Length: 259
Image 1: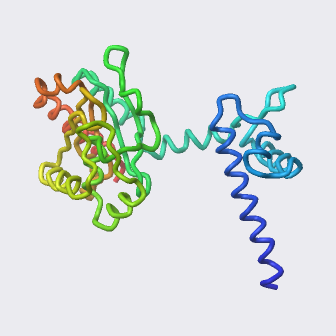
Image 2 (image 1 turned 90 degrees about the horizontal axis):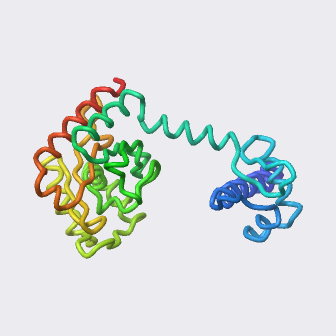
Image 3 (image 1 turned 30 degrees about the vertical axis):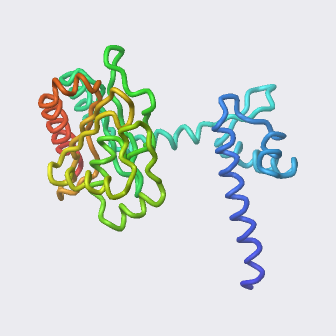
């Protein structure tokens, strides 16, 4: 019986992997993808591509315009995206706090949280006058070793979790001031733990500075960060006020979290 089940299980796993790759392929293009493109990019037969696409379309993971043979992401994917946003703690109350930080600091404000071993941007409050960093958007964050919120959250990890993160995300230099050697980064993280505050100046982008304070659970565990970004010149003038804004914002966000 076990041998009879094994091929079926293997085929099921293969189909699931192919379906996920199809979603990634369709999502990677603003125009979606055709069945022929799916077959070519994934090395599948055209009949297999049509079968998998039909399954995904039936469950609303993908859709297509009338008369168009290209597939685009569907309603179910949109619902999952909104569910992820809710799981990132970006409740109306928390968004209100971030708006207050943005207005008081005269700077874009960011909320970041843990997603497993990874770090994700949960919400951004900005404006035309004080726009966000163009490279940052809601979702998983890259280059956490050179951002203030990333350093703060890396400092909250235990040794095993930090080691796993550094293995998966090799520290790369984004500017001449980026700290990329593990020993130097660990020294920075020690300072962050001592101060319960993280600052980076021109490590992520030239002429840019960020400052972040920890968001904590009711048990005192760091689960996220509130941060703002300004020009490096502005930071040198307003460092104390910016620190006050992110510390207060982080405390208020912490107070909004469920027990």
